[in-house]
Image (cartoon, rainbow over all chains, first blue to last red; front, side, top):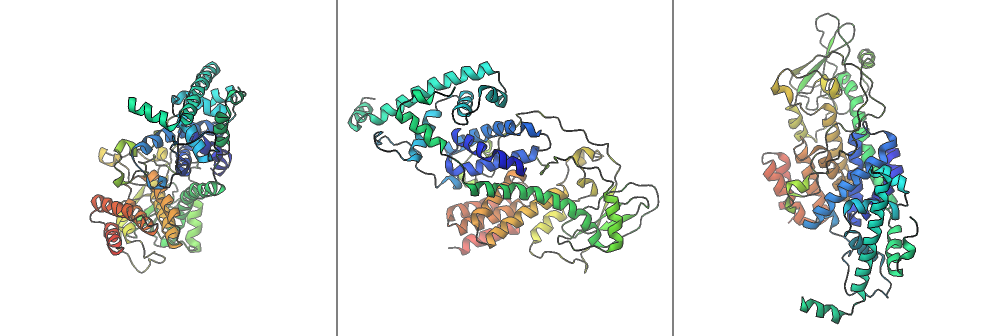
Length: 178
Length: 321
């Protein structure tokens, strides 16, 4: 178990973050993932631990996103301001926390099966074959999901950027019209 | 697949670079190791303590002769029962009482139990740290308003691994005999009256110490619902004690983490769930989360109205005004 934690904790934690778990809840979520592994340790071959952990992390993250949307759990009360601000000028230096919040906004637009492939490829730098083995889909499926994910991410980034550069007056006008 | 970021604007690349720097704190990994390995170690130590507990009780009653197979002494935490275990060759039934603080056992009995313990089936090298199914998540406090569905942890069935085959079961027979507590209750921890009561209601036998696949089938449908295993109860106690220790050392967050681990693993219907909720109340009070403390105390009172933990929690919240 110790070896599993040492080998995969950072990977699990980062995947949880990119799958929508806020920073303040990531430690708890990672703990959940490894506790689940501890209950199944006798069933999971060592070579499959990463696959098991990632599948568990996807479920934990989905649960966390759902819970976070409705309740404020005590460990997340001290969340950093991860809500993207419309008042932000992209020409200014964005705080890292806000950049991550904006990235979460971008990634949240992706369907989960595309998001997982995108996260593993673009953030964890895994190859298509590694991703295919981890999410248990053919390599061709990984490639198509990645293409789709990149397209969506580009669109979302442009959308967020356009929103941020739009002057407040214009945003206000749009709001009044709608 | 590596040039995607190059095609992005500076703004887009900034988002990705911010994510690249997003990593867990080293302390988080250490805390996780302490929690996960602590629980695994607890299970192991409880198993080991079982044999020693059988010896520590020191009450041996000889049963009738016959050929029997060895078994471990079973553990009882309430000191309200004795458990007889069949021992090798002589088929001696050793009636034992569990003692939470284990000292060196009498030499004569040590050898008997040690030799018998060697005949037990060996656990697989990657034995489970916890044998229970993952229980409802503690992430949702009763006051949170989250639905029961949300409170459930993720159902994890990603990879249908087949467990390794285990050796065939050895026939084991154990007996549970109630006896009053006596002067031999050396080493009892006087801080755990609730645990005593909760555990005294459970008959824990030597069979409970075996892997589930090796246990004899229940004789009737009524027996089909197994009581918590000795290892489960021991692990629960150890987690609660660890959370209390954190509270005593002023680490309320650590205590909360252990309570969450407890509730995640054993659920809110566990034998010691009231004690876990009590520690949660104490931790919230220590952290200044009075609202959460009150909500937890209310939930505890509703769920376990007659428990001493509920009364203590209510008093704590009331006295903290």
